[in-house]
Image (cartoon, rainbow, N blue to C red; front, side):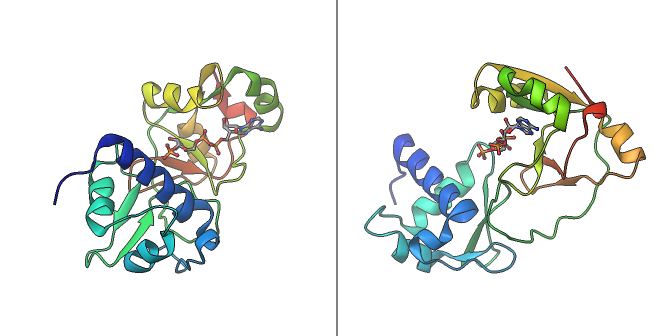
Length: 182
Ligand code: HQG
């Protein structure tokens, strides 16, 4: 099977993110309570909008820079590792975070974040990273990037729970202003 080119892989990855995280109903696809979709059904329902094959999907899953998706062991189902706005239960288990985590956002959000704290907005959780570089990239998606330092150690001591998705993104419900600096 020939490998798909990068442009097609990016298009397929964006499409899979859109369907598996946000709009399965757009193609009448049903996710199970833990977010899994049947791959054959997904391929059929995606037509004629996008012509996917199992091999393309598998390549996208393997090569995704952020490991955005996961195949079930039997390779019959696929789900997004994080970032959902649709209601799914990923069965995340609370874990101890590193002492400091980072969040990338845009300069224009700073005042509001210092008033309200970081909120999950349309997603299930606030997304945090273990390194600055990732935070800068995430921030660039929204405008002039700024990196916020999150005092995750203090938060955890005060009883806040943290989770880590299968692809290593740190997740929490909200981050109050007193735990944020830049
Ligand atoms: C901001 C990507 C004003 C928040 C990344 C962010 C990530 C506030 C935006 C994943 C606010 C939400 C998620 C407040 C939060 N006032 N602005 N009180 N609270 N915000 O896209 O973290 O490539 O929902 O700072 O790697 O940017 O898609 O979240 O700027 O892991 O796989 O509201 O998306 O992954 O934006 O990105 P998003 P995010 P993928």
